[in-house]
Each structure stands twice: as C-alpha cells, then as structure tokens.
Length: 166
Image (spheres, rainbow, N blue to C red):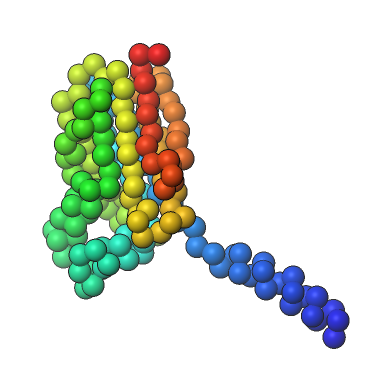
C-alpha cells in the first residue's frame, strides 16, 4: 500500500507536467537585398490561432481547410496587423500579407515588408497570442546578410531589435 501511495504521489505531478501545453510561435525574418524586402515566415499552432480568432472575431471560425480560405486569410491579416509590428530605422512599416499554408500542427503565415533601402535597424514587436495565453513565447530569427540573431520574446519583453550600424 505504501509503495502505491508513493507511486501516485510521484506519478501525478509528472503526468500533470507532461499534460501541460506549451505556447510558442517561431518567426524567420530575412532581409533580401535584391528585392529590398524583409521576408517573414511565422509558424503558429493552428488550435491556438483558432482559439484567439473565435474569442476575438467569430466563434464559427475554423483554422483548417474546411473554412473559407479567403475569410481565414482576412482574419490572419487583420490579426497580424494588430499584433506584429515591424519598424525599419525607427519608422513603422506596412505589412504585406502574402498568404498561409497548413502544416501538420501549425499554420505557416507569409508576410513581407517592401521597399526597404539601407536598413540600419530592424525592430520587430511580436505579441501574437500573448493576450490569450500569458505563457506565450515567440521566437524570432532575424537575418540581414551575414548578421544573424535570435530572440525569445514574452509578455514582458515583446520586441526584438537588430542594429546593423554597430
């Protein structure tokens, strides 16, 4: 009986820890000198995005292939415009939403900032999903030429800044 009690006391916290859901997104942002644009690819878990959309916009939204893809793209674009801010040389830039594709567990979103000449600094503020999930972490990998830097953003620190003039 004692062994069973010890097993239960040890196993329950371990099972609870393994059942805990992690909240994170990954963004790759690369400056393309030829096209003078910052190409951004963000991966977000589809169920987290769906929950945010249902809470913010419409309970009937499904983030999958069964839902009207034009409407889904409009929601993704609207959400990115409010939660993903890019500034070049201290000036906020307009995002150009390109589209999305579905992967196994996540949605891949494609965004671009066009007409960038001589970037001295790039700042990305990424608060995707942070208002819904307090433990949300957003990873950003930023590359400009040979300069590469990675950032781990959270609710207290939601901005990544790469200064190229240093």
